[in-house]
Every structure is written in C-alpha cells, then in structure tokens.
Image 1 (cartoon, rainbow, N blue to C red):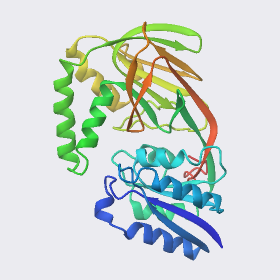
Image 2 (image 1 turned 120 degrees about the vertical axis):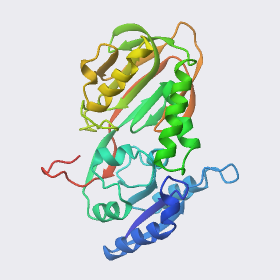
Image 3 (image 1 turned 120 degrees about the horizontal axis):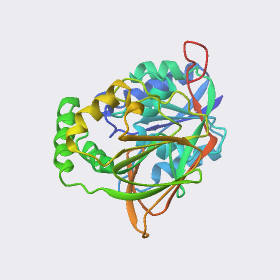
Length: 310
C-alpha cells in the first residue's frame, strides 16, 4: 500500500467549522485508493515549535508518497518548504481566507470538493519564489500591504463583512500616516528609483483580469511579477482601486508592473524591513534579491477544462 501524510491546521480560516471531519474524510478517500494516511496537526505555538515539521520529515524518510495540506496559504508555504526539490507531490485543501495558490491551480475552494478533485489528480511541477533565501509560492509584499495583512490575520474568524470593514478602516487610517519609501529596483540590469508605499512581487506574473484576487494563469514560466503604485494625490485612489478590480491596471501610469527573471530591491542604506511572504511575516535585511526556482515543487492539480494543467 502507498503512504500519505495529512497536515491539518485547525486554526485556518474555515477549519473551525469543519472540525476534524476533513482529515478523516480525506483519509477514508485515500484508503479507497489503497493508501494509508497519517494525520499531523499543524502547530506553530511556542510550546511545541517544529513538532509537526519533525513528524513530517520522519514520514517522508519512511517513504510517504504524497502530502496533503489542509490550511491557508501560510500553512501551505510552511509544508511546501519541506517538499521543495523532492518528487513527493503536495495536495492542497484550501481552508484560508484568500486561498491564492488553490485558485491558481484550479482546485475547488469548497473543502469537500477539493478532496474529491485531488484524490485522482495528476502531478505537476510549479515554480517557487525566493527572496534572500526565504521562499514564497504566491506573493512577497513590502510596505503598506504588510500592515494590512497583519490586520487581516488579527481579524481571522470574524466573518467576511467585518473583516473587510476592518481592512477599509485600517487602510483609510494609514493613507494619512504611512510613509513612502524611496527604493531602488534593479530589474534585469535596468535600475529604477521610485517612491511608493507598497510593493508586491509575485511568483509568476498576474493576469490583467477583473476580480478581487488577480489570477496567475501559469505557475511554471520561471518569471517574477513586480507591482506597485507610484506616489501621487490621494484623490486618485478610487480610480486606482477601480482599475485593479476591473483588470485595467496595466493602462494606468501610476501603477508600475514588470515581468522579469530576477529583481533586486535596495535603499541607500542597509536596513531591516518587514515582509509578508504568503501572509507570513518575516524580517530581512536590504538589499532584497528576488529569484525563481523553476519547477521546484510537485503538486497535485486537476486539469483545466481545455485539458491543460493549471
């Protein structure tokens, strides 16, 4: 019989409503396919740091052939880091707020439907982003967006309406107080200096399409997307927000966007900055060196309707 590992984060956005039923349901479906499954609770608490990671590594050493992660993008990144460069595929059952990677892989956002889609899904390889040695699967954010992400994490479990209310209030408060950063971008050998409050680097570029969560059509191009907003009058913010929502942001001169293989971000002096990689906060020292590890992660992903892997 083949062996699988299930890592379940009970603190992810929608996990509380599901209880322990999802890991049991997934284990039962795998058993029908002739696989035994070991469940590991994901725990980042101070009392037991790294316990889940040691158990995961032990399971991989014993020959586990698949790993399933039930959680949000931050949990998925933590589990994926144990699998980078290995042939063992990662199956994602989305339980977070945004679930960006699941969206881009074409995995259903309803957990039960995701389980059904994954048990027979083929294995694909996708790229992994890296900045100064720290990995990200979706996006690395610097500036004002990191503070908004912390607000989102603090409001986890309050419901979508209250969550967006808090984000709007926090965003409006920060618009009058959050400083601009003068950053120098080295974009494939081309240097640019700009003033901005937010910078986002994505693992493979975003598509200019309508929607709250911009989509990455491909996760295997070996490229970065670099995005931000130039300094300008506050009265233009409604227009910028509309541009993002309706997918016409590439047409606005205040929104900069670049697609490239590597990027370097620095300032005149070396300093420590706060980043959010896939929603997880970390501190790094400038300059920041961004790159892509092509095909570094194996994942389980259903085929798209046209027969092409997501």
